[in-house]
Length: 137
Image (cartoon, rainbow, N blue to C red):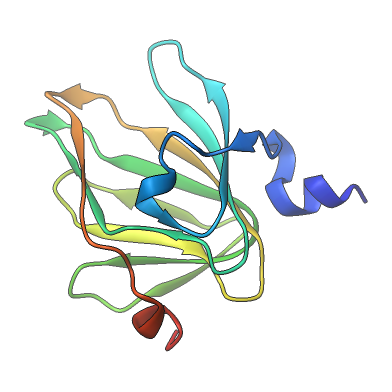
């Protein structure tokens, strides 16, 4: 099996995610799947890579859907327990929910991120998920 396919799944590794690198710990990759009318992206995380806590704001609708396609990762909402993710899992993230997601310590992880249409949408990037916290998972 192709090593890149094992890492990034069906939709491919894409390019280094330099546009949002300041909001990630570790290396991630971004491969746009669809940009017409709705944003759909394949996001691949190297082991230990995760994004900062963040919130998808919207006055109506909005949020994000994650479709896990390969590897193992984590998803966590503020004040809730972390959830282990594997290929085939999905996560519906309503707007205004503070959360983070990323790879497990010893596995690449990829998910398709679907931006849910809404009104007055924006992202707020918050604090990093610290090594001290992450290493306890």
